[in-house]
Image (cartoon, rainbow, N blue to C red; front, side, top):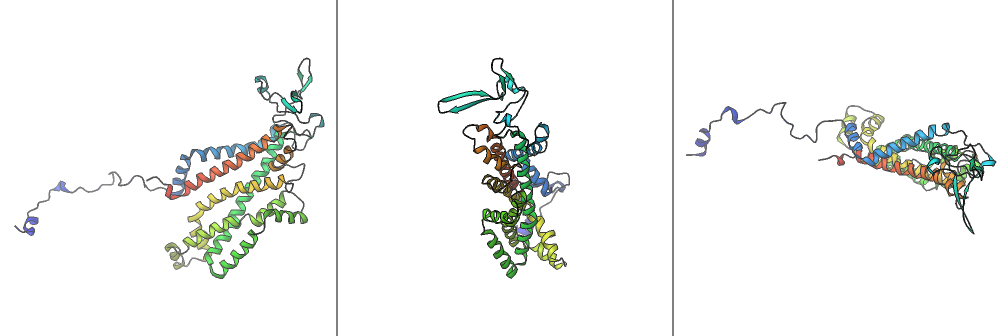
Length: 352
């Protein structure tokens, strides 16, 4: 019997083939259809370190807003009679901690001192509380720490705006048009980037008064270089894709292609790199304030607080602890948050 005769004798029954119904199990449940932002949110939520960092940043923001308001002192109020007071907190002092005791180390040994005590025989204390202590001029460290944190958060906002408005636009335009336009724009960026920030701030201080505006202008001059390079690299990778050609075919203008077609495809990477630039901007402000090129007295920032407390670090170390902890916490949390956002926006991190 030939093959054709064997095939002809095959009889198919109705149940040999079943129609794939709509209510049947999907072939691949891992890649069920869902929006990009929802998918990124689900990946971000699984990153415990990034979620914890976001919560800590929000907590620091709330303390920066309301912390100075709950104190009885202002950031510039001085009381010479109550200088170098150790931390004292109600209720906690009953537990033997934060009760105003301070150990003074001298050449002959150490001595326990409590500047709040007004009667050594009875142990009676002043009805005064400095939650984080007071400095050499009698100013409340709690109020000044959270006031200085406002400056750091302002610098963070400025860094985001500079990256997204200047750096992103500059890089996208440079990479999209290419040729002579890209060459001229990149040479200009290289010239600006070759000038150290410290030199720029010093030159600005010869023209403007030292202060927050000087630091802001310095960041506007040099703070966008990194973002522009990243945006340009992403543009060079995507501008030859098919969807860009389709947009041109349909008559879309260059600006529409840049900001409506290409930008949404790279916004995740840009947001991630913006978050990485925030700690650098905060550190730059703190460093400039530490070396005396930042916020002038009586206004304060975390850098100026660390610089001022460093002078009395050997005798009153508690004064430098609060601004150092807040500054380190901000930089660490922003870096961890940026890592979490990078993983969330990276499609390669999607679980298989």
